[in-house]
Length: 460
Image 1: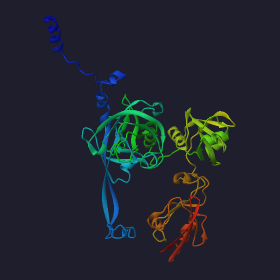
Image 2 (image 1 turned 60 degrees about the vertical axis):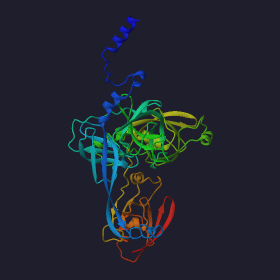
Image 3 (image 1 turned 30 degrees about the vertical axis):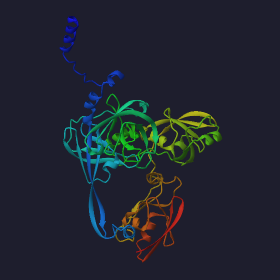
Image 4 (image 1 turned 45 degrees about the vertical axis):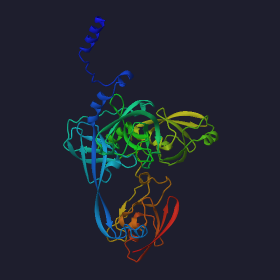
């Protein structure tokens, strides 16, 4: 009995074992906690405060549910200040930060706060609404902690991940989970198309632009969206893959002020079961080409309408957004291998990624103050214009690229093809300027919008 007591006392007097501060290397170590990992990665995740100034009107009808719809834009002009809160990730020691486009869009002032409470002014150097990504440069920053980008194509379903951000503005918060899905396209809240890593790590408002990291502390994605009905996390979150973030970094460092995607010059659709049967495929997979521009790099590589593309660089593609993503992360000027299936036979074909050709010349024109619709911008449709506006490949003629303040009020939209003005045919951009320089009380325009003919009658 006495001997047993000594053993117990001996154990109680032993020195405490200090925790190992290295990144967990095994499942057993991971189960002990993520503290070392968070300690190393969290300083590279920042809070972003964006000030957005919007124009509004103080209208006496604003509170009336009926008349407010008839008097929009009526009343005293007034500027309103909105504050946006989000997160960002430092990717270089000199202060390059990546966040979501919707966090900093239209911001007049951006402040970035690090975990050690240092504040920096920031400016947007590259942003893209469709990708929902923005690259910021912190002013007078140096020696900052940053995260390394991991090849997101090697991420697997079931991997443990951490989401770091500032949900609901409560301060930096860490949540854990797993990768619950890959190659998710669309379906996330906020609209728009995308290509995402899905995770069940809780992501809430304010987490946008934060980091999704693996157990080695490498960045695998930028937290972007959630699928929810209540506004809070339901365990389905979406992150923009790190490979796309790498392309944004590359173009920002090259001095681009607008993100450029490779041009496919084709239209296509996913192959379902019925289509697979008609094409003689063993299973529904890939994308069937339904339209092909003669200047498309795929046309020059020998592809034809009716061909099926099943893989890009050995990775499966089953929807147009997936293929656009694969092309985008390859980058303009680089070459990718596409698996083409024709007559039941598969073949690997190399295709070089190119930007949409800006030829023939688009001859852009913006109308001045002495015209009927000041600020209206038009251009001749060419592959670059068509790609930028997301129009069908077959679009021809003079296209509205910016409606301007007066054109927008009149009902014009970017992408509208102007056919006639006051019954005069419009075939060149200078025709628009000439037709809208003549004064008159009435203006009639015939337009084509997404394949439909429209007529506008405007009283000036």
